[in-house]
Image (cartoon, rainbow, N blue to C red; front, side, top):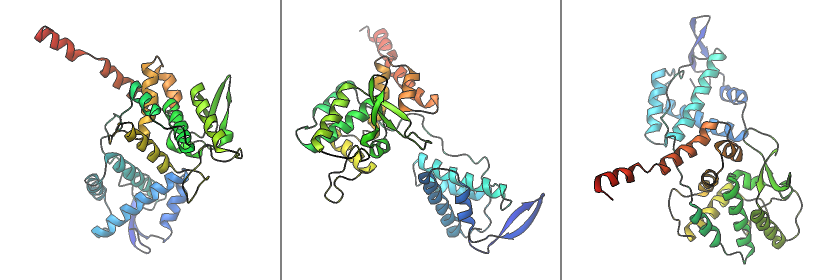
Length: 316
């Protein structure tokens, strides 16, 4: 199916016919995918993996059973979220082939993995968050930068990609507050903002002052590595900075990462009187159900059923 001049089964007016696949099938499909470059790259990688599987199995005319077998194969090798991404690409691909009259939609209604609705990363308590920030040495330029990065992330919930793509000129005002504008998911401009609380703005100004002269379009947070000093950082380097400081603060757990700071922002906002709607807006969630995961987790945390039962049984 997936190599030039391979004959495949197609449907035309209900009839089944043989039709050769052109060598540009893959590129035609990529052109069809209307998504951000990173998403297209992810889908491309997923389809190439499916290509490799069919070649390995000697499959030239895949069926629904083959798609299910492929799903089960990758489910044994990958995390559920990864499997979900791979299957989403396969489903989109065969939906397209059916629309183009190239091949039946054999992936229709093939179920993906069942995902746990709870977050895979932990959040920090108020005390832990305070300790994390307190333990950062701010006497050096690197310390000032790292402190400012974590201060922004832990109070606004911004993702690492938003930290990396931020420019100095993105610090603006919103009403009577300093704000950092960023590009939300699915947007092409930096039209969304988070407010910078006074201590956070002060940390940013302290870092920028110590950093010295810079242009408005320079990255807000610059790399200090020998090979690319002054240039834009990567999401990997920001994640590493967050992880290093977590470990230095004694918070060494596989479930505590840079993304935990986003969870921390949401959780602490709810714990301190923020509503679900306010938290949804803070994190720029498109679906309220995503935000409700935090609320439901806190509902369970506040549920003291075990202690009530213990008191009834043990009298204490």
